[in-house]
Length: 392
Image (cartoon, rainbow, N blue to C red; front, side, top):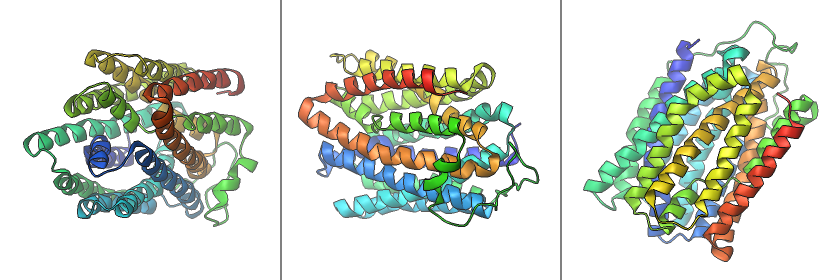
């Protein structure tokens, strides 16, 4: 079940996430320290996700057309590794945006081709657990990364630029590991559709994929993209804990705790989804999201409350992130997996710029609680949509 390529991809994701997550939870703190307001933080995160999303769509379609996954995976991880030392060079806002763009282009180039490679390395009946295993490895990096940041900042408080340079090291070794990947080109068809190479080499073809895609894919995509419209960046969870009085260290530890739960739950959630159904597992995750965001609006400074919410948030992520992609790859032919995943994630990321920008504006104008009450209510509406409109 766990092939050589799956294990390598999981190891690369672990190393890359150590690098990325050394920086992700401290980025809002760093940005505030160099003068970014909440609206600008929201715009930066939304911009970064939009860049990643467009790259995912283009890379997914091109990787299907060329029947080449590993080239995009290698280039994507290389770009993301370069972005880390870039952040250490300057605090000028335009440069920060550029560094984030390079990082997100790298993520976009690798994501859909990597997911298509995972799909090609697994059978449909085991697909959720394969994606869950990969997410578990990826998220283990998200546990180790912030812990390293806490240790470094404990001994060298405020040395963010040094942190950016250190973060390059695991990213570099992740890039080296990608050199051992090989494309596994299929010699069969799936779901009655022919091999890759039948799609015209048009990098923006993914935008028209919805015209020819199965109806159930369209309904699933609509739900996933709709959910993304109010699912703002996780930096707002960190900022909310800070707003409630938690120290930088406590907020980072809570974020580490969330990733621990996510990493531990991702593979079991995939196994449950394979056996009990992807739709039910995904809906359960959305309910957890609504509970967490509703709970974030509660007036309390008790750190234990936030740790409980972040534990539930880890279970939400385990029940949705990898499973949503596995669900897509079950609906469409494996030869179209890159385009199918890339098209959805592209539009999700465009929706993210709306969600994160709106969250920053709502926070500034209506208060912190308003952001979380709104997102919780919208999540419950999304649950109703999936119950009534989407088949597995």
